[in-house]
Length: 157
Image (cartoon, rainbow, N blue to C red):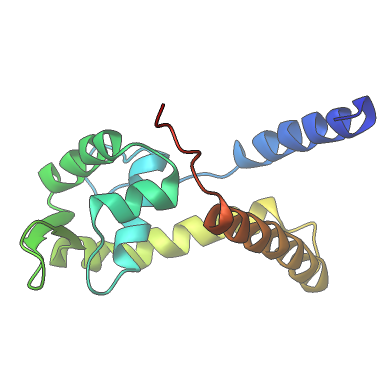
């Protein structure tokens, strides 16, 4: 990689991190300790999976190990926001679903989360946001296609 592209990518990473530190995460229900950003992200991911998400699904989505996902999910289960259910098709799989308690708070979480992003991106017009989304989608699609074609080398001697 040439130095110019390396410098551009380093600047991009720094700017993305700088932008994200301005996003405020929703407050928990009264009397509850706050949820960390990873917990909220998992809660949103689980809520958007109607049939329930597996630990494997969440690990792939987040790029985090299944063990780490399990630790985060344990906290959500303890708080009564997520429940574990057996998969009716495959007994080896456990599905994670949001509880009625989480559903009752979810819309408020979602609105507060979007409001925080709205404040961060208020400098952009709707057309500029659409342009940013198009560029991000291009990156996602490219990497998804690359992941599908990536084959592990044969490790047999």
